[in-house]
Length: 572
Image (cartoon, rainbow, N blue to C red):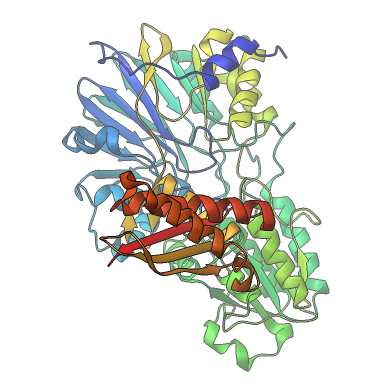
């Protein structure tokens, strides 16, 4: 396998690009707004002849360094003033990192056409009802071809960790794009629906100008373990369990829930769904025939107290350590469901990069309560929904694209995917290591990064969207890590003499405010010297900065802390 020239890696990820020029007539423009550099927030905008096609519109879940943030959205500024130009929003599948931001986009224009498979649209419509949005939807199936504005789209079946996932092939006079969405090549999937490699080959024979491929597992050698291998492990775990079983998974992982239901039925246990999204999604999947619930197996969570623990299985959300999800609340003893010694908790999911600390915090909390915790690290209770390096290699050899742009992954995943593409003979200059906001133009069979557009994180914090800035998050981190000090002083507006204070109050800095008694005389002296300077007379801002510098230097040297300092000086 040839390695990528270091210069190309440096160019792709170290240098700022010029603002993208106007799109040349006869060219197709591709602009990723999310998913290139993160595992989540997936969104790509295609532009041709003044019309736009959006592929996916997902969210990213916050990390510890983003306190108070609920969700992270793509930056919609590129299309905010062009929503009338949007021909359709094509959704590859129903995971939150691909559909979760749709409600926020539809707040700007509720009638944007949503295109996807039946299950994807059903999950999304239920979510939109909570936002009180009635969408315009158009269901498609694999093998179907539809035209949206100037974009001819063909939908291809792909296998993933959720049913009804689709790749999309977009054809325009300027060129063709094959976007895989998230996919793998499980040859014995639970629902019998395999990735349609025959369609990939047919499209490759016709010519794929740009292949946009899932990169999440590009660093993993070989092939992803099949879903069928998880069933026996779960069955063995259920057979040995003597008390309550709690299984945590994504609320949209229909295949894993099916395996839990089957194992529970085989061992005479009842299953209760816990968590609003889990209850909602599994109800939809059952009604539509994607989930086969064994007779007399599912009960309401309110009825579990009437059953002995050895007959109970709880299927809940929170496998990524989300603080408000069911499993986190159980670990914090903040849920009607409790666990204790002898109970078994199964984390049936992969760790999304960035969530490790949150997940292990929940694991530690559960184990402190006495529960045994089984996860992917110590048992085969989950398999990925993404193609590993061997599967990607097959796809490149089947499709034989002219250009490649790895998508859906962190930088290391994108680079690893690019190297796989090169190993099949694709020239390095045709492997585009782009990032969010980079603008790629396709013309005459050549794809090139031509510039970039402003692109950043948009934070959802409670009811506010986009109002929280990076500066706000920095302040929150300081408050959380270093604490807070407030100083209050009153000066005579005419003479500048100190009338009252300085009063010093701290939170999260020291055990007792008495530690500041030593510095109070220095603050008074510094204020008096500043007031003596006629240029500072009446300038309360300058006096506040004097207090800030004195207390800041003291706290740094004596307490080894760098808290947030809020000085207030009032004239009287």
